[in-house]
Image 1 (tube, protein in one colour):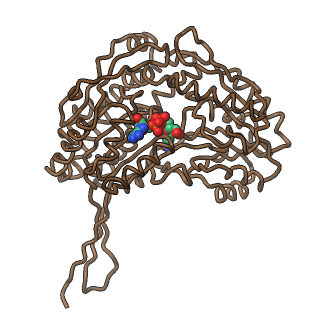
Image 2: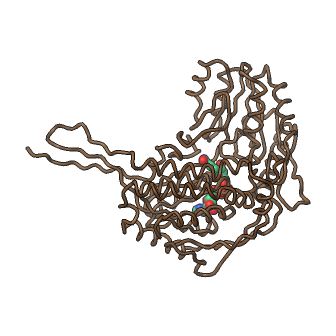
Length: 497
Ligand code: NAD
């Protein structure tokens, strides 16, 4: 547990303006342009960051290419890369509180959650991928004895990484760590509204011994900095987490430029399904509440559609509404807070527009639906529960990415599956039942990359996370993530007649 005096000191400490990291040097953007960083806690300006344009992005990609081709990293023995990346993991652990508080000031996540999900998870990722690379072998194909088929993996070259504002350190590390471990050079574009903790990560990466040019950071807007990276003809792979709309653009950028490989981790509209035979109704209700409201619903796998079997619908709904009303919403750095700030004023307005949509389309607002603590200057919203939601409503189809839960009754297993699969997205799901056979049938029939059984959330680096349908392609986490950042090469060697 972090002590209050340390948090207060970190909360009040000034933050130096952020620069670009290109070829191991901290630089202003060439045209000197910068942008404000506003804290969602109180709406105050925290600092400024550099606003990179296409020229800066080009410099970063060229530096990455040069560093990659020099072999300073890609030709290093895997054990050497392992030593650097595990050192970086240790440095993240040593700076855990600074990194977490910096991120919370930037994006409003509750501190307890941020400590675990941000530095905790990022350190774990660098350690896991660092440790993995000197344990993975190539293959020899089962050919006739007249030839030798060698199958090996090579780094792809320059990897562009574009990440969102929720959990920037964790999601950034899920991509940066395997990309670096595999021997690539990286150009990272953080979200313009959550760059600070990733800039600090870059400083620690330099301290850990990542060679100049192997890890570059370009901050700035999606429309300028992100687009320049997406269109750059010398980026080999783009690894993206964010919204479906921007994911589509990246696919276009690839088609317009060098057909770079594009991996997309996109949004979800995840069903959380409660059967009447759930083993523990109280635990299921508590999980339904935390599954949507932690981090103000700004979690890609948030269980934003609650499907409840008719026999227990009224009782379960009452429990969920009561649970939502008990949550303390407020300053994410206050230990008494359960739910922190909505990330930005723009996001808050989107969330409230979905409350209007729910009411207009005939769902019943059971609790919440309002901006609160406005006098603080920050962006807070009361946990919101709609019941009697039908599958055609916007709040049942579209990702809100805010604290809004849509609750729908179902009659039987078949209808639960139909409702679960009734959106274009397929990121996560949850099923509560004590019937093991039914749990397995649901696992098989629900189209989503991740399914929880008798729980929601909680996982670790050893299991992959990726979407089905329009929730994306490829995987973060686990050894599967290395596939994105490596090319497979076959050598066919003639052993003589
Ligand atoms: P976003 O798509 O608006 O932005 C993501 C990143 O893309 C940011 O860095 C942004 O600057 C950049 N970007 C924006 N426009 C761009 C352009 N034209 N070209 C290139 N880059 C551009 O998403 P967001 O609002 O930051 O994050 C929320 C979204 O992320 C939600 O949809 C959420 O579900 C999704 N998400 C998915 C996962 C997952 O693992 N599947 C995890 C977390 C968040």
